[in-house]
Amino acid sequence: MNVAMSGKGGRAAARAPLVGLLVAAEAPRAKFLPAALARAAAAPIDARDFTGKELETALVYDGKQRVLLVGLGERKKLTVETLRRAGAAVVRRARQFRLDRCGVLLAAGAVASAEAGRALAEGMALGNYVFHGQKSESPPPLVKQAAVEFSGTAAERRAFATGLAQGAVIGRAQCFARDLGNHPSNVATPRFLVEQARRAVRGSRVRLKVVARAELVRRGFGGLLGVARGSAEPPFFLEFDWRPARWRKSICLIGKGLTFDTGGISLKPAQGMEEMKFDLCGGAAVIASFAAIAALQPKVRVFGLVPCTENMPGGRAIKPGDVLKTYGGLTVEVTNTDAEGRLVLADALGRAQELKPDFAVDLATLTGACVVALGHKASGLFCNHVDLAERLKRAGDEAGERLWPLPLWDEYLDEMRSTVADLKNSGSRFGGAVTAAAFLRKFAGDLAWAHLDIAGTAWDVPRNELYDGGASGVGVRMLVRLVEGLE
Ligand code: BES
Ligand code: MN
Ligand code: ZN
Image (cartoon, rainbow, N blue to C red; front, side):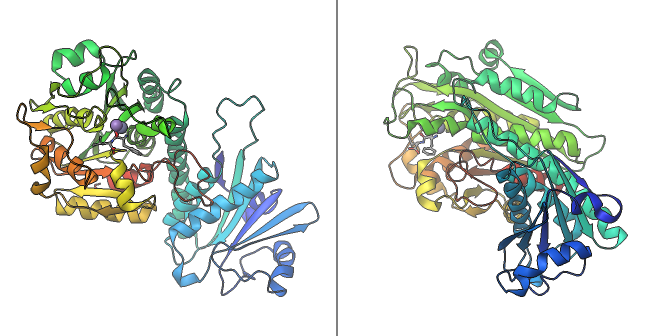
């Protein structure tokens, strides 16, 4: 979808076959509307059928044109999340009517204009997302062209336009992350992730190095190689590097790229195992974030590391009790082959230490226990650094991708001690998200590091205008924010 400012007088937006009018509760009869649209919108407002409550909608027809009123609620309480969802609501309605164009009109208000533009465009992109997969019927038409008219001063309009362009990039990147998650694992193999990562940064100045098996062996990526042993698909380790002309801060983004997790020899039950195609969602968020970074070109050095593999119970698979030597040199007794995410992340954290970034953040669908703890509405946040934790929380709040802190105390490592290696990879049933994080901490060394457990937020999250099932693409909006905050 191409989202653009409507141009002089806002005619393209006002004349679209469906036009969304985003109006506040105090003044649903918004003064900024062209007279013809204001007339069309009058009936539901006069009847008090529409009062402008947050995300309330009313549809009227003016001849052949469809006019969708969307409430923004009280002006003072307006949030970027409401704008995101309002943008998505307009696009969804256009899709429902199989229209390939729509328009949106709104006015400057409580949310800073650049933020408003970004949120609107993000929402419009996400509302336009469908994963059609391999159904035989032809895919539903999407909106191709959207025109937006923003009423405000020249400066406000300029800021809004900038935000709108950024939001389109970020929204598109998040849809890309959704696609990576939604593909079945026989399509989205480790090799497929390599191809998609290349595509994400093609033609940009982001460098991508793909480390294949021979080099993984030579360099000692024992965690990743161990997990990959049971699979016929070869593993890969992706290393992104965005090196702007000038930067003050650097950050390393790490994502778990398990293209399918059977559990390995510690096999998972059949019930619901198909969901484990989503086990690459941390990696997808990192890959897709680089697509956005390539376009937005922040003045921050950004590294990206994504270990990619399947976890399968093949004849050469690792077995409970086996010991692996990870990239940084620490050894791990694999007491449960289903605790594989932490093994591949251990390697990635070891590699991250060599890059010496100011900050490192990993995203992983790491534990079912995190879903038990926080449900589907927040990701678990574990962090060894106060400033980073605050930055992350803020970025998550602003992006509408919530994070909530859980502890990283050393006591949780008590149950991870091994008699034959430095650590074992699983503890008791209890506090599973926390023991997993405590394990990772050992591999983060002196990094200012955070671990985000996105097991509950990467798919099957609450549905609304922005999300309609499948992979959520969580992490992309938040990571872009976090990086921008380091400029
Ligand atoms: N990918 C899973 C975590 C997961 C499970 C995410 C269900 C979302 C829904 C991870 O690799 C895993 O299997 N974790 C185990 C760890 C245990 C064996 C210590 C878990 O959570 O059961
Ligand atoms: Mn597992
Ligand atoms: Zn897993």
